[in-house]
Amino acid sequence: APAPAPAAPASMATPSWAAHSASGGSAPPARPVSAAASSPAARAGSASSTSSGFMPTTPVPAAAATAAAAAVPRSHAMGSVAGASGDTSMGSSRPSAGVVLVDMDSTLVDFDAAFIERWVRKHPDRAELDSAMIRSRALYELEANFPVEMRESVLEAIAEPGLFLAMPPIEGAVESMRAMLEAGFDVRILTAPHPSCYAACAAEKFAWVQEHMGIDWCSRLIIARDKTHIQGAILIDDKPSVTGSQEPKWQHVLFSQPWNRHISDTPRMSSWHEWPQTVVQVLAEQHKAAEAKP
Image 1 (cartoon, rainbow, N blue to C red):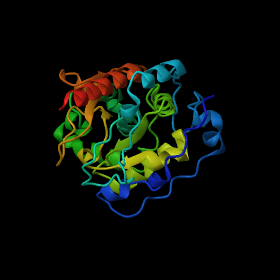
Image 2 (image 1 turned 45 degrees about the horizontal axis):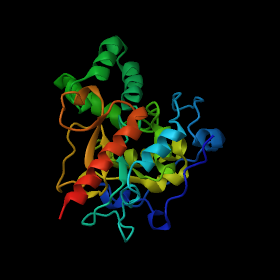
Image 3 (image 1 turned 120 degrees about the horizontal axis):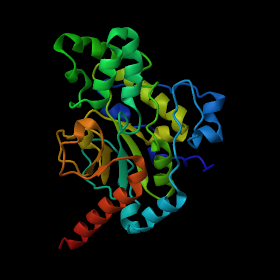
């Protein structure tokens, strides 16, 4: 099995989510990891099941990861989300070449799977209809796809304790994250807390990362409501358009979902097995554009 992800640099030892989370405060303690979850097999992305629904995945071949990193100029592949100072906070103007930012919900984790499981328990009479609608929905915000009179119930279900911890990884995601890091890319998880449960959502996201990826990855988790304040070369995200108060310095790469199929002018990944080609192509184009500047 691949070795666990290496620890983040000392300058990144403290997670940065508190500076960006609307709830404020210090980072909550992550839930203790079970012996099974902390084993080398589990940290390497084992296909064995866990209580929170870890699904079998197919590892990314090491050769593909190595080739991907080799295809990008080293000055561009190796970057730091923190720039020179190790600071990911708002207001920094230093660009970060080679930093790959990855969203969580519906990109790294299967949000719909966890929500459907809870929703059908409450509404068994609508199980088949709603399950199909959720999986094929046209609108990004889940509640917007339901009748107006049901939207409050949807938000209440999202805010119930444990939802964000119960989400299974999307196939190939955990292995691909480790492969990118081991190939030399600076990989960070960038996710927004849900507005219906800011503090609980943030805590559960930290616990999820520790349980499924290992505690070292907690220092690579950034929680921010406005992702445009965070620097990087690429943001892999399922949201059709990621906007905020700043002009983003990263290139948005769509992670394909039904609600973003109408977007045709943004690079996309249809699955995690495509990351070597996609990441290399986008970084190479950025490097070419930078060289062309006077």
